[in-house]
Image (cartoon, rainbow, N blue to C red; front, side, top):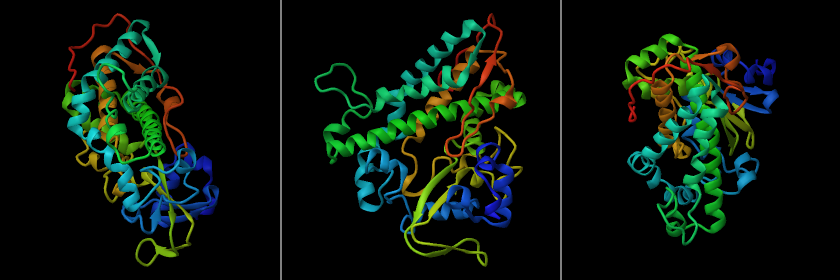
Length: 353
C-alpha cells in the first residue's frame, strides 16, 4: 500500500493518505521517502520510548550532519550529558520569570505596529518576528557585557561541555525555536481565523487559550514527522501484522497521524478548543528527546494570540483555504493574509492570558 503514496500526498493535505495507512498498514514502507512511516499512535509512542531500537544516533541524522553531536542527535548517557545543563532555564517557572514579561511586551508591540494598516501577512509579519526573538535568549552572553544575562548565559560558565558542544546545542535550540515557534503561532492563527465560531468562543472565554494552542498543535504539529534509524532487524507493528524492519532502515514517526488517531480523539479532524484531551498530543515528542523548549514555545504563541485578541477586534482571514499549512516535515502556511477594521477599539488587555 505504501508504494502508492507519493510526496505530494504527504506535503499538501496528508490526512486521507495517513488515515488509509493507519487503518490498513500502520507500519508501511514508503518508497517516496525511502523509509518506513509509522502512523498508529500507540506504535509511534512505543518507538519514541525505545531509543535502543529506534535511534537518532546515526551518521545520516540530518541535525547531526549540520551542527554536530548534540542533545538531539545522541542517546543514553552522552545525550543526558548534553541535555542536563539546559533543563533548568527551560522549566516553566524559570521561563516565566526570565522571559514572560518581555515576550508578552514584544508580541504586543509587534501587533500594535501592524494595527494601523488594517491588514497584514501574519506569518512573516507577526509569527516570524515573534519566533526570532529567541535568538537573543539562547545566544551566550558576551564576556564583560553589562545588563541582564540571557536565559542561557550561565550555561556557558557552568556546563560540562566543550565550546563546540555548547555551540552545537545552542544551534539546535535556535533552529528549533525559530522554526517551530513561527509555525506554532502561524498555525494557531490559521485554525482560529478559519473557524470563526472557535475564535468567538475564545474571545468570550480567554481561559480556553492554552487548550486552543494544544488543539492547534494536535491538528497541525509544527514538525509533522521525526526521524529514527533501526539499530537491529526487528519485527514491529500491531500484533499479528508486524513488519520486518531491517537494521539501518529510516523509520519516520508521523506525529500528524498519531495526533489524528480516532482511537484517542473523537472526530479527530475537527478543530475544537474545548476538546478535553487536546493536551495529550505528541507535537513535542515523548521519551528522551521530548522538546526542551515546550514552555517557551507555548508562551510565545500564547503571547501572540493574546495580543491579536486584545488589539485586532474584527480580524478575519482573507482566504483561509489558501492559508492551509503545507510541508513534508515542517508545516505552516505559505501566507496568512488577514484584515481588520483599522479604526476598531482595542479590547481590554489581559496580558497573562
